[in-house]
Image (cartoon, rainbow, N blue to C red; front, side):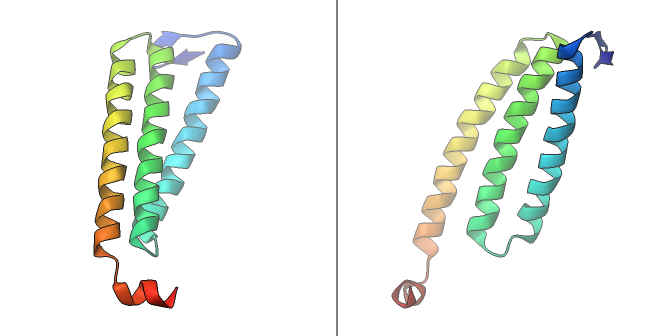
Length: 104
C-alpha cells in the first residue's frame, strides 16, 4: 500500500489510511456544523473541533510521510487553536445580552 508516496505495508498502512478517511469525514461534519450552527457558541465549538482534527491529521501525515516538521506544525496549531478558543469564549461572554441571562 502506498500512502503519500511512501510504501507502508501491513497493519500500519491500513490503519493510517482508515484513520485519514475517518478524519476527513469528521472534518466534513464539523465544517457543516460551522456553517449551519444555530448559535455563535456552536460555531466556536465546531471551529475548535476542526482545529483539533487538523492537528490529528497532521500527526497521521507525519507518520505516513516520515517528515518530522509536520509534528511541529501540529503542536503550533494546537497552541494557537487553544488561544483562539479562549478568545472567542471571552468575546461571547462580553457580547451576551443581559435580558437573555435574566430569562435563564
